[in-house]
Length: 79
Image (tube, rainbow, N blue to C red; front, side):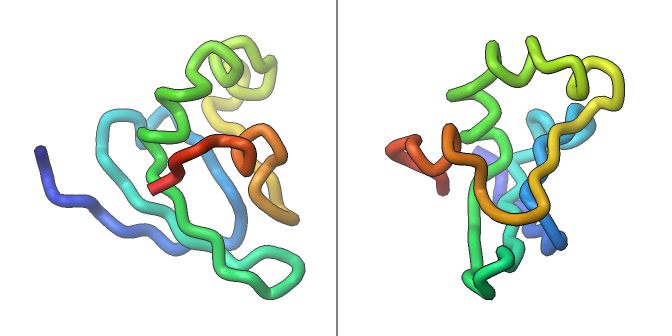
């Protein structure tokens, strides 16, 4: 397994260009809490959901500025 790359962003993001790159993303939410997740782990668990989103198909990404989306917070494993 390849070493995780780290990326700091201003929001939660799932991008087509990051799929398969084993990136661990960290951002600070609106409550000033640090959120960390493995991009591929989240994407693979919710692949069908992301692939069916119009924004993901049109723009190649899904973002949430305020927090981890509820459907992501409900996952058992993020990192």
